[in-house]
Length: 218
Image (cartoon, one colour):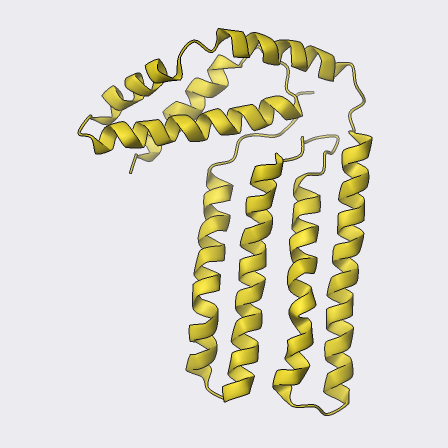
C-alpha cells in the first residue's frame, strides 16, 4: 500500500502533464483513468520490493510516451471550448433520472405509510420501502453525471461507483429494518445490515478520495 505522499505525487504528475490542456469532460475521465492506473503500478512495484521513489519512477517509464495523448486532449479541449457550457442531452438524461428517482422514493414512502395505517405487521410495512434503494441510486447517478456552470460531470464509471455505494448503504438499512422487525432481535438487524453498510461506506470513501478536480476554469 502506497503512502499519501506518493499518491499525491502521482496526482501532481498527471496534473502537470495536462497543465496546458483546456478542461473537458473527456480530459476529466482520462486523468482519472491514468491516475488510477499509475497508482496501481506504483503499488505493484513496491510489493516487489522497490522503495516508493523507485516505484514511482518505474511507473512513469512504464506509462510510455504520453505526448500524443496530451496533444489529442489539447485538440479536444479546444473543440470543447467552442461548445455550450451545458451538454443538453446529458443533462436531459440526468433530469429524467432525478425525476424517476424521486418518484420511486415517494412511491416507497407512501406505500409504507399506507400499510402502516392499515395496521399490518412491521415487517410487511417496511418491505415496501425497498423502492427507496433504486430511487436513491438513480438520483445519485443522475446528479454525479450532471454538468453545471462550475463543474464537469463525472465519468460514467466513477458515477456508477458512487451510485452503487449509496445503493449498498440504503440496502443495508433496509435489510437491517426488515430482519429486525421480522425477528424482534436487534443483533439480527445489525448483522444483516453490517456487510452492506461496510461495503457501501468503503466504496464511497474510495470514490471520494480517488477523484480529480472537476471544477471549470473561469
